[in-house]
Length: 90
Length: 198
Length: 104
Image (cartoon, rainbow over all chains, first blue to last red; front, side, top):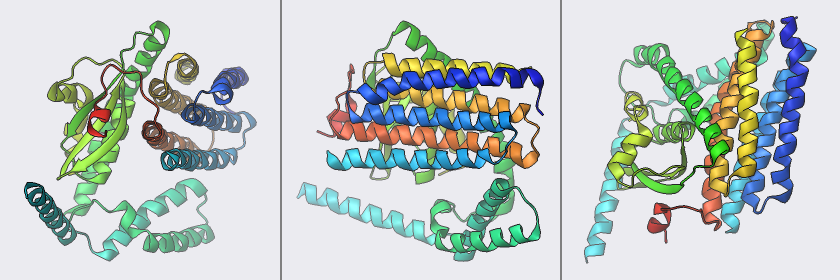
């Protein structure tokens, strides 16, 4: 296992990042324009990638890293497609 | 008449650029080998297993993908002769230097965003900056570096008559003069990038 | 010890990035906050995890691969969203707008 004090502090770090993602979801729900929603969704997905990488250390399960790589790629393609949609609709 | 001459001049210039570009391109098998090496390194890092079945499967699959997509990654590599020694020089010496510079610029920009969020002392504006790079890959790396340096965000890139211009959203506009703004925004990153890209 | 410092710094930076997303006035300044703070915070946390974990060497390399891909993908997506927001007609609250001078 990894170092003990690091593993003790890790669940609190995950809880704090989830609280931050909750703050961001205000901008997802009440954002004035579509661009605000896209930005906030991108931010929340990056936080989810980091949280999954932390969970792989906490559960001692290296296969979760593959999940976070795939989620990151989906995030990139999704952001580009939303940007393309906004540009075409204008 | 005047407009026609300008259009004609642009057309001729574009064609000359394109022909000199085509004449310097790498041969096909070298492009395939470079793409295949990059993809196979990525396969090894992602799979993380070294048994023969994994290695053979990865080699075959990445070779097929490399044959199809051989133009995407090596589009801006010029024929300079000593490709291996140049690649070793870039990967061993220039890229660690770049990562070292960018790490401290990123730290500085994070602290500056924290200061801006706390005190809200913003004065935003969009300025236009001329760039000395011409290749697509170099412009992409320059735009990403500008986005990560403190206080700036790249908005758009235009290329006209062989000259590239960047539109930069600046959160605290200090000067409107093109030269001074370019010096403040790009700094040493562009001179560093001129060593690799053209 | 150094990895704990990296972890706390990354969480601090990501919290201020989210706060900037809530407080700034328009899309472009919000993009400033998220692009820089998410990239820096995520790279810092992933470096801390790579230092603290006891996975084999390929497992540690995967953390660095994720950090490198975040550093490439995040500015690219923010650039695309900023350009699309300008094209779809969101005017920036700015003192000078040279993009509107050249593309009327």
